[in-house]
Length: 197
Image 1 (cartoon, rainbow, N blue to C red):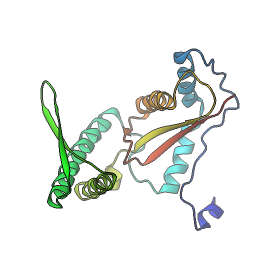
Image 2: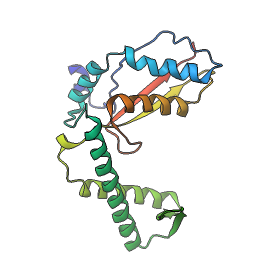
Image 3: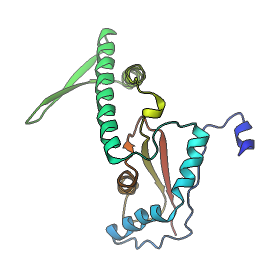
Image 4: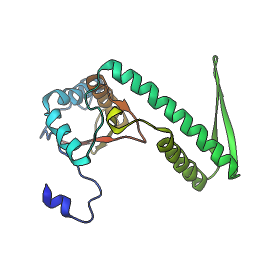
């Protein structure tokens, strides 16, 4: 591992938790095959893989939160994101980008967000949200619950799509560890690589 750290161009480092030569997927029964994917989590050495990941990424946050700690952290995270988005919308408005307000009128509340009409403006808005997030987040690193996402890469024919597999396996991981699901500002990305048998 020390040799890898000395390389100049390391962008990503993957920790391989488990390799299964054959999952014996039916390719016809969605629930059965998703269940097989979820059960793989129970048979891997997750704690060892997480310890290595934490060490290599110098993660200081909470890796094994209780459900109560998760609930508080989730509320904190949502509030920080709400404030960040509002700050970014204000900043974008001050820069006079051409923006359009999109409102979602639901039964109980009305929410509006700024949507820009071109890719560059969306990128600027996303950068502004990220900067505002870091400005708004006053938590210490050791107070933050791990945030994760699951990505699935697969080839061949299966009775489930990549998003289905990521969603269901991610849900199982969230049930097991009480981590915060975050598709954009994640600490840990779990990649499932499913190849045709």
